[in-house]
Length: 154
Ligand code: ASC
Image: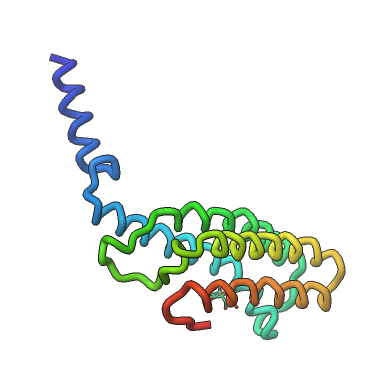
């Protein structure tokens, strides 16, 4: 009796999980996950943009923390873009080169990670060097978007 209950419970659980998802559902989940990760990265990047524009006061401690978070998140981009979702026909801004030139894509991700580490380190040297390092991080983001994002919005 209990075994049967357990079996039904497990079957119900798996039928609603990614485990039992169709190819299209898995592709959509991968796209949502990619876009979600980039939003999390942007949430740490945004306050530093505000400081660079003078909209909020320069705060080296916040930049050090946020750059450290970006350095942790950026390597995950390689993981979440690993699944080639092109065959699904689902729309996203991801360009073919992500999978066709994957070594270059991974190199660009690695550069971004390195630049985030350098930004965190630069915060101990004052505003000038910090903002210079921030510019370098921003250009690595932009460089990857220009190659691999369909419509570059900045
Ligand atoms: C962001 C975001 C981008 C990059 C880019 C860096 O937060 O949404 O596209 O940073 O502006 O140059």
